[in-house]
Image (cartoon, rainbow over all chains, first blue to last red; front, side, top):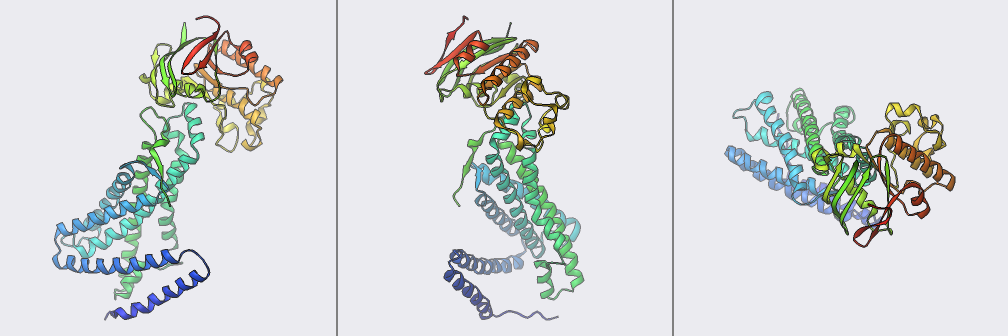
Length: 267
Length: 202
């Protein structure tokens, strides 16, 4: 089956739609014109660059290049997790915590899927490892960012309740158990909803792409199921780690609530 | 025998706070607002970093985990919080059966939704909640601030009786001089950065 390549000028046609939308939102004063245009430009530039990088990477196929790209992806995701929290931990904690949680969960789940489930040779074959890791990181990032944002915000708002529970002699874990549960849930909900709606409400992007690229739907479906399962597992473990490390850090060794360890970020 | 002992505690502006409260004794603490009364109670409950040592009986604050300390030295804040839907869920099961009569609330208050409680009712129930956790020392931050005169007297009497029956050491923040006279033999006042004995003897 032949894949129809897209000429660059055809993408311009799609970009015109965005420009039209930008024009409308400017007229209607929706206030999103700027971010819409910036995000669209970023998509175009970032994906073009990563296309070049991947071409080079596939041609070389070396482990250290794969590892380097994986590290860059992780660090960018870590920065993004930090930026998405309205209140975050002071100092290097905010970055370290989100990045650490994503590293442990997405890398281990991706490597597990590569070595045990898919089994390309070598196991780090970039054609499989990089897209898989990219999808893992992208989703884990959302999950970790949502759950940490929820955790920090809820602890801030409910500080009086948490302290009153501490006063009654509750261990710190018990004093924030509801908040931890809520934070976990909000990190997990996007993956769970995506799994529930998959195939009925939405055709997942990866499967759609594979089918467009000529794969038989039965193969594409199997990959999609695999990806959704490991994404959910990775997101869940990532959010779990982030929430437990993050909530631990909000208390000190005497189980006191230490809100001065949170800073409010603008935006 | 002294049950609760503060030795050279320093927090905020306060320096060198040393005092002792015996079993079954109430000691009052007063001072202008912002003078650090509440923070001193928070330091005693180990809710804020502070200097100095606090003992309950022979045990030093740092010798046990924070929650174990606060279970024995329990702070009742001026503004109590209620986080479950029903009142009863905040109490250990044995305390759900009985509500002290002098609080003016029947036992069915345990089935009430929290939103139905007035601020005075919350305050009284917060005292009962703390007592039902069986602490050894109580730190009370203006425990009768939202109560009318009759209720204030009833709560004072009840607290004094519980203090005696349970041999509690009670540190009581109050601003009303007549109340201080009624509940405590010793009374400390915060003056600047130090605590000075206003009534009673050491």
